[in-house]
Length: 254
Image (cartoon, rainbow, N blue to C red; front, side, top):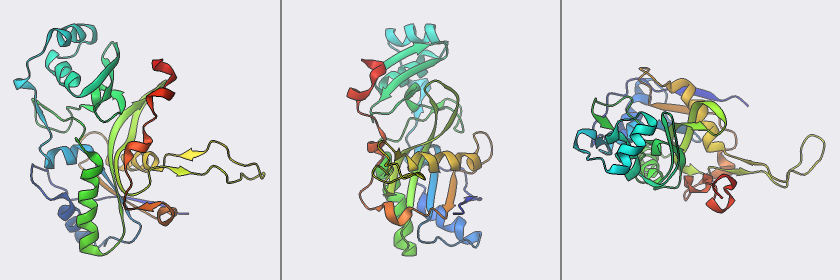
């Protein structure tokens, strides 16, 4: 199987109200790369935050006492800490330069997913309020114009427990299931798989982040072509929530 990762050039610095689906279509046309059946479009959450106006003006934030206490422990700006608290259901762990929390969506990540990169000074961008809906809206625009079935993944850059560095992960998805349950299949030696459940949405987001980059690359949209299991996992009712491990199975918070 061959998979192609293609960064779509010409995506402008986005602003609130921009039609990202239309911009993606224009970019693919300019590249002479028409959208095909089974294409997966991975979109950086920064792009989604901008078109949805989902930003926080840190200058307007008034930190509470708890924010000042956490800021002292972490070295972070109290206004940023206040924004993290506001976007969290639970503050799980605080340490030097990090705050691990559970977001309103249920994601467990650093700083409630709030990021200050690739956005104007003084602003911060939280995770989209409904990333699955955001993905579905863009997918609907592309499918209605092209008549092709595609998937859209909204990606974020996050760390992983017990490992250094950050990778792309899926926080929203539309058009295909985020998990590929392979239990019951057999391995090369005929043994039945008992626990194998592949987080394909995260794999696609991570692969796309190699092309997107994390600095000034200016490629917030990556087209992935050749995903052989697309038709098997294609779905009109998918969402990223199934990627979240239920808290009752979280042995580290018990």
